[in-house]
Amino acid sequence: MTGLNQKVGADITAAMKAKNAPRLSALRMLKPAIMNKSVEKGRDLEDAEVLQVVSSLVKQRRDSIDQFAKAGRTDLVEKESAE
Image 1 (cartoon, helix red, strand yellow):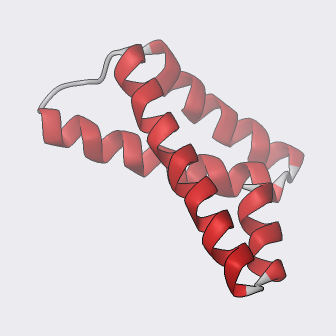
Image 2 (tube, one colour; image 1 turned 90 degrees about the vertical axis):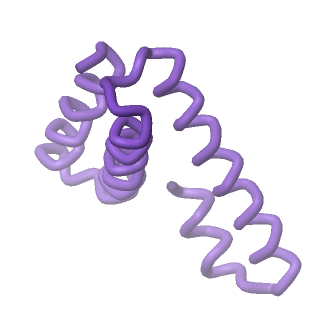
């Protein structure tokens, strides 16, 4: 397990203890994305590869925010922005 992958696990624990729901939700989406990419590659991911997974998830969130804003769904825009 790489440093960033371990940090995500530690951050999930910290967010649970702090009862920080938005942060916990975002980290819980990140963890399986990292694990899926790791299984796809058949090995543990390097830190640079973990960062690529993070940036792809950020891009997805930004695209979702744009689509929700165009549709006038401010409730979903706020939720995605928080994550």
